[in-house]
Each structure stands twice: as C-alpha cells, then as structure tokens.
Image (cartoon, rainbow, N blue to C red):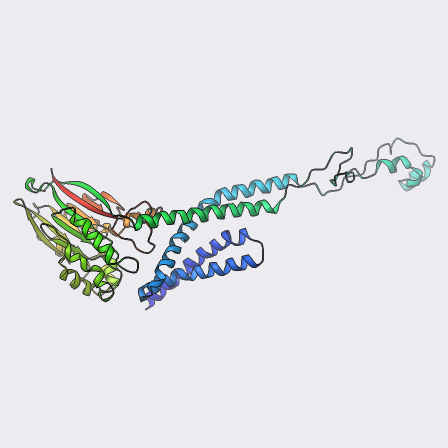
Length: 452
C-alpha cells in the first residue's frame, strides 16, 4: 500500500511540475492578465490531473480514459522537450532585446547649465558680484540666454528635439516584441508536438515491420545452419490493443515459416478475464519445433499465474527458469528461458533463476536464452550463454526517450554484446502508454542462426 501511495505521490509531483512549466511558457508568457489567461490556467490544471488519472484509471478498468490521456501524455512529452530546447535561443533573443532597450534609453541626468561668458563679461556692479558670488539675472541678460535648457522643445511631428533641431533618440522598448517572441515559440512547439505525435500514432498503429538478422554461433552444428527463430515481444494487449492486433501479428509470424517461435514477455496489460479473448488467436501460431513464452514485467501486474496457465493452454510452452532441447537436422540446441528479473520483488512467482535454467548442461551445445530484459545478459554471460533474445525496451518507442533507456539497459534495439554474450533486442509488436512510436516502428524479428 505504501509503495502504491509513493508511486502516486511521485507521479503527481512530476506531472505537476511539468504542467506548471508548460503553463508558464504556453499561457502566462503568451497572454495578458484576463480571461484567456484564466482559461489557460484551468486547462493546464485539468490536463495535469488527466495524466495520473489515466495511468491509474486504466488499471482499474476505466478504459475510456486511455485515448485522451495517453495522447496528451505524448503531446506533453514533446512539448516539454521542444520548449526546453527553445530555452537557449529564447534567452539569447531576450538578452538582445534588453540590450537594445538599454542602449536606446535617453539619459535621465540633467545637463549642467552653460555659463558662457560669465567669467569674462564685465559687470558695472563688480563689487556686488564679488561680495555675493553671483549677479542678479536681470543685470546679466547674456548669462540668462546661455543657461536655457539645451534639450530643445517639441518638433512639428510631435517628437522631442535636441538643441540645434536634431530629434532625440527614442527608446527601443516595445512590450509587444516580447509577447510576439513568446507566442512564436509556443506556436512552433505546439504545432511540432502535435505533428510528431500524429506521425507516431500512424506508425504505432501501422503494419508490423519485419527485421531479418543473421547471427553466427560458434557452437552451432553445421547441420543446424539456418535455424530460424521468429521473435516477438511487448505485444501489450490492453486498453488500446485487442484481438484484431493479435490476429494480425499471428498472421505475420506464420508467413515467416519459422522453426521456432519465441514470445519474450509483456504480452498483456490486464487479467485473463479482461483479455483472454484478445489473446486467443495465439493458438494459431505455427512453427516446426515449438512455440515458447517467457514472462515480462507486465505479466506480474496482470495476474501472472493465471496467464502462465492460459498461455500454456494456447499452445505456447512457458519456460520458467527451464530449458528445452531443440533437435533439427541431426543437431541439438538448448533453448532456455528465465522469469523476468523484476519477479523477485513481486512475491507472486519465482524470481529469475539462471542456475536452474542454465546449470548442469552440456557446455559443447549452443544455448539461446529467452529473457525479457536485456539487462539479464550480465548474469547470463556468467553461464556462457551464446545468444540472448529480449524485448522490454520498445526500441525506445519515442525519440529521444531511447537515450534514457540506455541508462538502464545495455542494448536498446538490434544486436549487441554483453560480456561475450550476443544480445538481440526486438522493438516489440505493440506499445505501452501512448499509442505512439517515433524512431522505433513495431517489429517482428526473424533471427537466423548461422554456424561458423
């Protein structure tokens, strides 16, 4: 209970700070005090509450929140990124305007009166002048004439004039310029964020991309050269993805005519009661040597024990810290699978046990490990795993979020290596949260193993 409250509190704090920043840049800086600023403040508050309401409400079955909430989450993300990137050029532009204003502002210090001829002109009342230090103005008309203000008067066009008829410089200060600058930045960020989100929605809901990759394994027998493993992850059946998506994915897998099919976690975001019918087409997956499944972290939020039984009933062998022999062409390959590394903190299933899955095996055989998260490769490498197949990252899902994923996972997308173990990470066939993919299209991967 405390962990849930902590999550909700942290989420509320983060979204609150983000929406306060968006309000400052999109509302306060672009409007004058009045009706429109009040409307903007209310809109920022409502949208700020929509984000945590969606993340929590969809878990409670309030699926109607999914589309507006997750779409705004994507737009919010890109607004934040774009406005932060614009901060530097805006700061420079404001500094230039301020400097121009300071240079153009007239001096407020009064000019000292000129006493031309005061020291050289003789006055008949010299003694009086010496005693008082000055002479009456009426007795010195020439001084009075020369001490008149030198700032000039008002010209015929209404502008002030300096002495000699030259117009005085006008202050280059226009509050409208700052308002125009703020509005231009807001319009650019808003249109760009909406455009990127629209492109991302089209990509996420579009056709599944096929990635074909050949991976050489030193221990693979020549008789097994070309063994093909169709790999899919992160389907995320749930509020925004249902049976039609599963059917389309299964059809794409079957077109590959694979030897083995591996589903490496995060199949669902909901219980069997809610999503059992959506997952049912999985029973139609076809392969020569078997279909396999390992759990991802989202299974542990969705009733993992029921899903293990359901997936097994649909014909996918669930590898829970286990391995299976794949015999083809007279050769043998070990296919192992571990529970997701996040299972340790759930208390509802056995944690990942690499020893149980990989220990006491014939080291002369090649071994392919199915593990949801790429980070599992650090432990898998200790057991001499030749290749690990993973998902979890979604390839970053939305650029530039992929940069943040690199802080947690050793490989974000495609083929990499961790401590001598090759790791292939597929982008995933679905999405989590916003129905948006930018820079990481939905994907099914056909891994072709080659002997060396």
